[in-house]
Length: 132
Image (tube, rainbow, N blue to C red; front, top):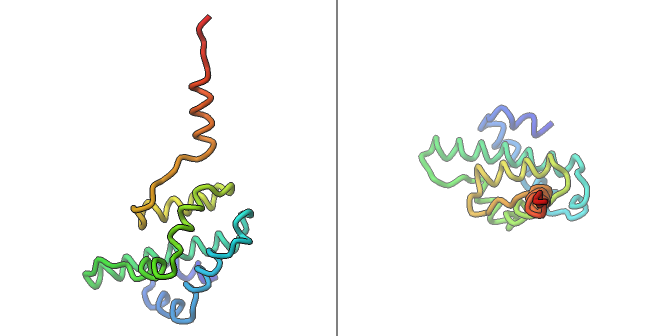
């Protein structure tokens, strides 16, 4: 429900939701290791919500002619940026995709890792020898 409200990129809705602690809830969910081994909708919802909040933070920065995304600053202050890096190794493809999207658009300091399947496919191709 909150994530859906954020999709419309309303700065007023964003401020209300941020003021009641939605970003803090998303951060808490992101930090909860019990979601680490499961796809689980709570983690997916948190990631989607963070993504939309980051988009609105970018919009606010642009409107105020600032270079600082207030949402990214809050994520940095909460020391959760490394969680996005860790989610690159998540088994759930949808969580991986959202994490990559966030990294690509908002956290260029994190290097994008190839998926395990991509690494396995690359090594399979290298091992293949068709000489007779």
